[in-house]
Amino acid sequence: MSIETNVKDGILVVRLRGDLDHHAVESIRDQIEAALEETHYRGLVLSFRGIEFMDSSGLGLILGRYRTLSQRGGRMAICEITAPLRRIFEMSGLLKILPVYDREDGAIRAVKEG
Image (spheres, rainbow, N blue to C red):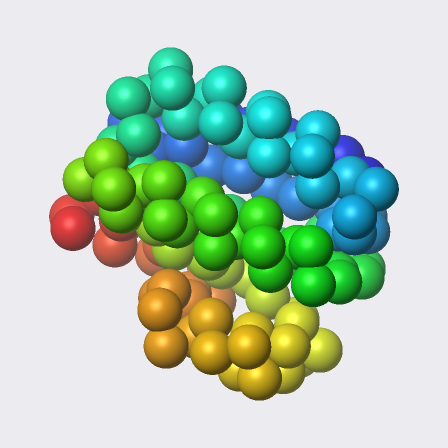
């Protein structure tokens, strides 16, 4: 599992690659939280283009970051999800909570504009 982070227009963009499972979630969560602190929790975009597998701990990671951002007045979006991930997100109800975008730039724009 690897994570790439950068800040674009004040929004933290996180690109995930590999398997998002219980072995990787704690480290990923810590890295995202540290980066969010640097941006003062303004916004977060998670890109799932490189995710090959995700279990329920990945859903917990997403929901936990959403809760944190919401409590601090920030916004969040997800983007570039594969068809299998879309099914998981639909079954979990995640798509009713978080906006999903096909492209990273659309997600960044939406989070920035609020």
